[in-house]
Image (cartoon, rainbow, N blue to C red; front, side, top):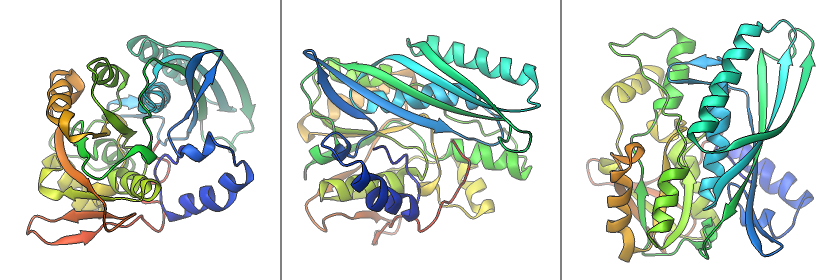
Length: 329
């Protein structure tokens, strides 16, 4: 079951309610989707819901966010995305021009990601009950390799690669909500990541785990992986790219960039022998030009995320107790 990041409450809901109630080997993978075999083909299946507010924001909207997010969850399973479903929950009174704008945005995003929207559903709820529009998506992709890409495949000695700068999506949303204006507009990083992942796989890179850095940011995502794998993920703060305008906005709003959402960034846990080659492949891709090594995996202290700070001190980076940025995706 994909956590999608978040805080301790979300993690507890999954661990104490959903996972025990629906327990099965596929759910126990604790990944962004389920990977299973059907008639000799290996498939990946995922679902997600989008409640972002506002519907339109710098760099994107709820429509392309929904397509990219689902495509990315399939890619993080090592799958080539193929088919999506879309369910719309529309609030009575939503302007038709807003809906059409979202539909066109989804059409463009699906084309860019080489996926087809093949089934869907629409429901209308009373005015005041739907906040404009909610979208649910599900996606199916095909796995064309023998790698076991999963948090539980992460091993001590792995190198952690990040595909680019962090924090832009969350700050783009919050700056708009708070009416903050900067010298240049901070735009969401929403983008489809499957192309870059497919290049890594095609090159034969030994990938142990992939995860897109969404709600809850890099800190929540890595805490989940460290816990699932029983390892220590050790990050170097100096190596983590954060744009100056994003860093400044975080200071104004009181946020830590490590916990801020992204929608076009992923981390790759790579066998050390292939790390340099993987980094070169990522940097050659338009969405990975700023890819960098941000840390590595150690055996101890097991289940923890640690950060070496600018001044050289090491501290534990915990899961947030609550949700830092609600309605962010």
